[in-house]
Length: 197
Image (tube, rainbow, N blue to C red; front, side, top):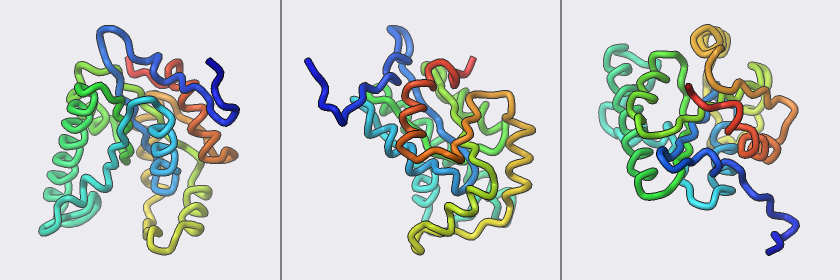
């Protein structure tokens, strides 16, 4: 059977073996391209679901505290709740035969370890989109005005992520790539570069 010329076979499903299904986690700083890229990756897999960490966090309507908000203890509690919900949803989706593709900002090893601990039956693939601070800032300026965000913590977040997660998963510099090229490379290279041990 010939594939149409505009269709490329996805290779991410090779990550699924007979014993364990897979879960792809894509993180990065705000503006790194997580939302766009995870939509493209999920759309190119034969059976998949995209799980948006920001959307899950906004399920709390009354009393919501954002991740860096105050009071800090309540912000941390809500981050943990969001992460727990992301993983529960990912497990349910995976048990139903779909590959979960999680889009979430994971700033440190503690949160990543928490994700992995809640996905014990899965092969976890971890990709950090790392186009650099200036690219992230620029991408925010060209977003639809309704989707722009105010964030002035790039330097601190970048330093924290490199210190905490610099030796984990696949750090993927996407500065010179389109979202489509980024998705293609994730589909073809994540099985070899992003598997959590």
